[in-house]
Length: 365
Image (cartoon, rainbow, N blue to C red; front, side):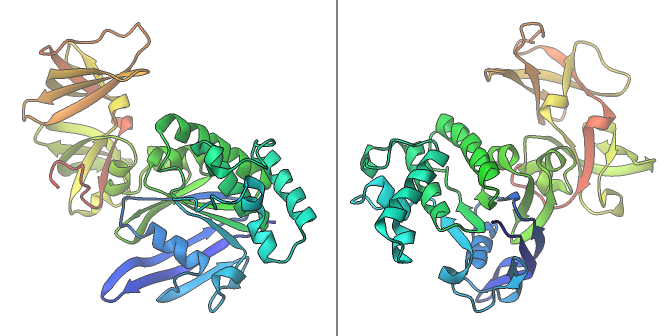
């Protein structure tokens, strides 16, 4: 069983501070949905409202179409996995998993059978009688998931559960979590500040900033078609040019900056005035010895960094702005040397002009 979750214009106020500001989103049954954003943006507060540990100051939380007002956390069809996992060190693995069933009065034989069933589901079939201390970080993570699934929740809530793991294990557990979610078809609501986790695992992502939901879309849409400057700068890397729209035609615009005048796609609300910037992802920037007839910027190479599957090339234009291009490490692409004079070129279709918040990554922030 799984259930949808509707946040209907929810707000969360702590005194005069509004942690969550009029968030409206409808999460579908069986969906893997992630709230993505920097620390302090309100995403964990949303999770606590869904689980019942915080009541909304305004708006409503509905699970399976039912208003959760006045319903305590232990009465909701949810299970919550915390950052620290909170496993019981003096219990064997199977008792950890079956603890919620014991509280509900299920007899020991049935508890044990359910625990072993769930251990098979999370690929730990021989771990039932092990101590928690005998498990690796990834195994503990899977035990915590199995324990949450034991009470058959309709909605699983996960609060940055992979943040304490090392990089390789985090990448492995992303695939594990996604596979478990698909096998069980339970609705997963995942909280993270790690864009890689959100993009890799989610059916849809809600990007948050300062308590507000900036965009809800698929990972591909979030990355390729950001709704505003905050989303573009928070999700992935960008070369960012401050400037103003000079003219527009058929969804394209001429954008005047200190580094030159460039052609680019016109994003949502970018023609309405106010602060606008041009965003160009490093993988869409090219380096050549000669100037291009289109978008072209004279640069001097300042650093070349080997990143494994790609090479990151830093350069500065005539205004001193730092720019980055990424090239594939395929053995075929010529890599310039530090100090080389080059031109950075890019297609107008790969650059977008956006309005919106100033991000910490913005050169004018």
